[in-house]
Amino acid sequence: MLYLLLNVMRDWLARNGMISGIGVLDQIQFRALAAAGLSFLFVILLGRRTIRWLVRLKIGDSGLSDAAALQAHTASKANTPTMGGLLISGAIAASTLLLADLTQFYVQLSLIVLVWLSVLGGMDDWLKLTAKARGAQSRQGLYAWEKLVFQLGLGALVGYFAYNHGITDSVHSLAHVVNLPFQKTYKGPVSGVAENLIYLDKTSFIILATLIMAGMSNAVNISDGMDGLAAGISGAVLIGLFVLALVAGSQPFAQYLLVPYIPFADELAVVAGATAGACLGFLWWNCSPAQVFMGDTGALALGGMIGYIAIIIRQEFVMLVMSGIFLLEIGSVALQVGYFKATGGKRIFKVAPFHHHLHLSGWTEQQVVARFWILSILLVVIALATVKLR
Image 1 (cartoon, rainbow, N blue to C red):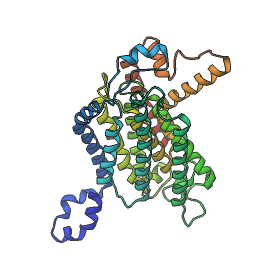
Image 2: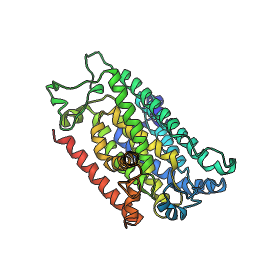
Image 3: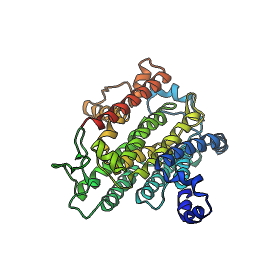
Image 4: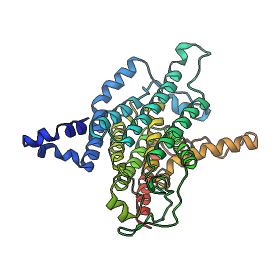
């Protein structure tokens, strides 16, 4: 809204010699960094008040686990407030509304993704946390298939509208290209688009978008099992996407690095910055011992935002490299469940997801979280380096 207000009042401000003071808002890099700082401050300043409010509502974690081996561990966290994702989503929305160009389609769609998944996660959290009060036969959250239907539905809608928005007068649009690792999208800064690129048709684009968004939303949710784990990894990945969004929306930078140029995608750097800032701010309250948990309210939204930004800037494969820990986590669950069913009760890991296996193998919770943070930062660095290796 600040940026829109600047555009509305630009002529008046220029006539009165006031444009130089706030003209910095025209710089996308400044607004993206400011969004990160503002989102961080929102979470820090509203955190304690929000935690007290959640405690008064008795919105706390039950401390229960499906795995007997983890029950002693989770019992120690009983009654810690959850649904802290309200802080994350609120900060992202506020910072984006203030500093992003709200006339841009990609920004509008990002807000729809944020609200959709935050509400979905909030419904799941609320059903879980009020089950006891509603009676023994009450539902323990949304059923898995219900959440998946809404995640897949959102992914399909995002894919459909993003594909249509990327249609240009040319036969093919870089907004629809498959951006493979080490592939040159441009021959060079002057010679234009490279040949032999793979372009997705509408159906393929929608399928890819659906899988990426639903997969990342669930991957972050599964990883949210230790103090600071999901928020810290998400923050690292989003910083990487912040850089890539700035590159994708700048034709000189995109051509120099030989990656797809997506007009106006740099506005998503404001969204990525706001999301990264919210994650870092949430770590202030979520680091061990956690004062609040994000719950599905935050985890589903964070994963969806990561997937959405990667789809729009055509960096799905690079994002998957950055998100290696998230893939390890969701992969461990898939392997455990599949192997358990195939062998009639045998297990690959002591318990899934993998962070709990490491904990039961002798690592402290702080060791697991810190080492996964380190690995995630290294993966982000490696992923960004591959952008130049083309």
